[in-house]
Image (cartoon, rainbow, N blue to C red; front, side):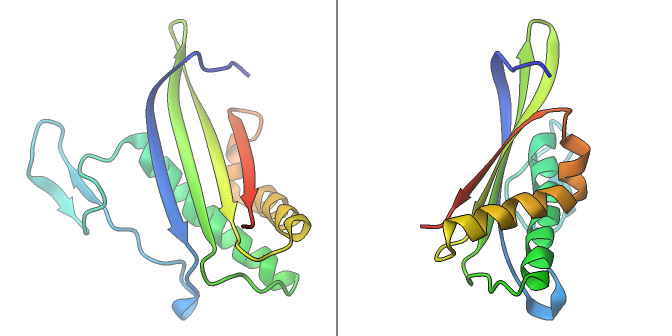
Length: 146
């Protein structure tokens, strides 16, 4: 795997857990054509002209959040109401080649660090987006319990 020498763009997401109706929340985005201020499709604004890295981070974040919920349910772990997942995906360059790298942060205030770390790694092992990126891009997985 190649290391990025220069970050060109970063897509950031913050996803919270929602057990309402068994869904994992809503995604609010405005999509527009390049060079046009008029939205081509309006869902509800997060940021105009989302970058591909942000869209990828958002999809990965939703999937990873669901994986955390599944693992927690399977292991009878009660997730804190303010559990969240932050994902940052960088598009970068090394020489003339382009690469991606990512940082995943699971925020589970109040959980014991060892329980939260195990939960994060098991969720990472079953999340389809994590599987797709494993061995293909650099990914850092962080856990915050404070």
